[in-house]
Image (cartoon, one colour):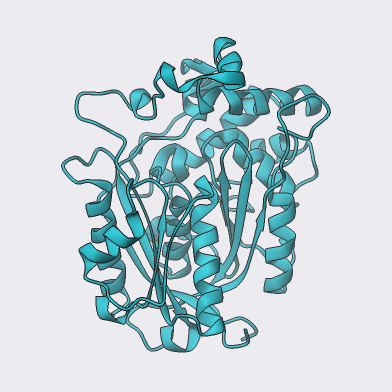
Amino acid sequence: MRDGAAIAGLGMTELGRVYGRSPRRLAADAVRAAVADAGLGLGDLDGLLVSHGMGGSPGIELADVLGLRELRLLTQMNSFGATAGAMISYAAMSVLSGAATTVACVFADAPLKPKQSAGSAYHRDAAEWYGFGGMTAALGFRSVNAFYALAAQRHMAHYGTTGEQLGAIAVSTRAWATRNPLAQMREPITLEDHRNSRWVAEPLHLLDCCLVSNGAIAVVVTSADRAADLARPPVHLWGWGQGHPGHRKERGSAFGLATGAATSGPVAMKMAGITVDDVTQAQLYDCYTYTVLVSLEDYGFCAKGEGGAFAASGALGPGGTLPTNTGGGQLSGYYMWGMTPVSEAVIQARGDGGDRQAANDVILVSGNGGILDHHATLVLSPHRKGA
């Protein structure tokens, strides 16, 4: 473990309303770009980790498309939005143990279709609802939006969190996106814009909800020693952790009040040898404004119940004390599951953020998956651990 692991390459396709390429093709393009970014060739890869979502047997099929042979590590993983963090941690452990030397981790998706709304991208057919799940569907819980609205409502009822505090997160995230040429949404917004945006599932407005994007992002993980001699500055992996709380959506559980960040955060920070006070910026999974708020609390950036006030203080935006989601996140930047915060963390750690560049000594990255079912945390830095 003393030699450390690092992200040596980052590959990103076009993101947003990108048509004409399947998820597999997008994934292949992202892996090729990540390998080239590191100054390597495809033949240098001996590991490939593929995120769920491409259908069939995506690991085998993607390896075949890329012409990869004699791999020492190949698997498909799915912790939903926590998958990127989990993949990178498994890649790092494989490199550190000697099970593999150079591992590509990739996510790809293409839910958007021409002439169809973004809202229809993840539509589930009514025939899928059966058994006990059909009862919740009959009550109106037919989408992820509804379940996250329930979680946000619980937090609001318990702690007094307000819609305006959620809006502050949307506004600060958009402020960062205006500085990111890759962001899908670059027009500034106000609290009034947030308040006037249509309801999706109360208390969540449209501007509380993430984008839908087509595209792919990949990273290459190798040893810190090797990464130091490659084409781009290494992004060192100081620590990682996972948390899977198992909260049932029922009275008496902590659903909506706490997440797996409360477990994965301390594990990752202990491994990294830091405390929350050492973190200079955060890239937090923001499928909804609410997930940013509750993650801030569970990581310990503020006390439980004070996430709303912390966000409303201006701490998260440009000039704030904790620059958060500096590329616009999933709310305003692009939605690539957990690869959204990972990609911005790599950009920031390399000092490539342009006029959105923030202090980058210690970057905390989160991934949230399912309906608060999974969480992954990474601690990244441009500096070698202990240096």
